[in-house]
Image (cartoon, rainbow, N blue to C red; front, side, top):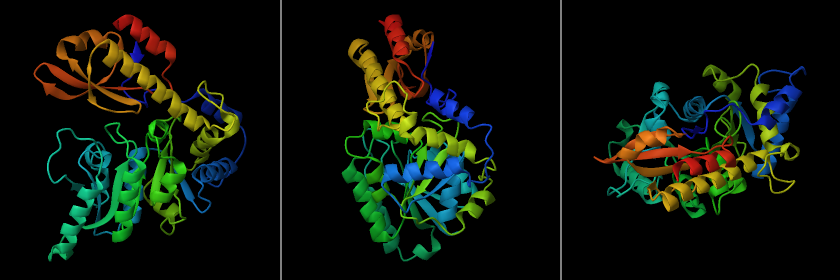
Length: 361
């Protein structure tokens, strides 16, 4: 069976594990002061073209979101996001647990199909309404804007959409925070967004490792050197400071070192393993799309160019599919159809997709 339930249901990329083993017996400092973590920071700064960037390594995505949002916001502030945002739906109230309200920005008129994006027009309308309200001082103050790239629905912001959000945040003096749990796959599928552009338009973002080839770990980037004061203390206060922080640093060194690019999809000597992982998963997702849409005749539920693929499956076909492929039931569409999610990753292979084609055709 091929497992496409998620992109974090496997171990880690072989090159990451090999680098981990190669450095395992060396002694190093703790709490991020090791040479592997520092080299990883240098590599990430170079990839982002952000020489001033401050970079911190944390273990997981929910931990990262709760820690960063709480560290940046004042006690009376909340974080703005769209309705389908990860922090609003799938983090068990972790942000609210720190004492900050998640402020949902809804579209002025419901869209036929949610696209997972926070749109600039909706954000501006929300902010204008807030600051026009004479009772605003009695309300939770907007202190941050949160988006994901790619979105929870596998869709992408364009460079113009991201820039529009950035401009509004600058106008209202609110930081823009980008959750990059699946950033490798978003960058691989995007036509006009890369790490340098992200570093110019986001005040804070994180580069996801857990879902992109690492055992665990996320790299938080403050591209303009704009981290809150005593950030290490803030991270530790949240229980998020790894004593053996090189565990994450070593992995990001492997993901961003050009010399570590022995993955099958590397196209040039200058490619990083991180970009190669994204390219490989997105290419296989398009093979999957060809199978489900062009050959099996299923309808896409959401038009996603990333590693997350959503299809409308007749309920009568679900049990048969489960014999050959693992997937996630997303939501009912009607009495006879269900939307299902299929996710490729760094661990998905051409052989698995070919085997699935043979079994389903």
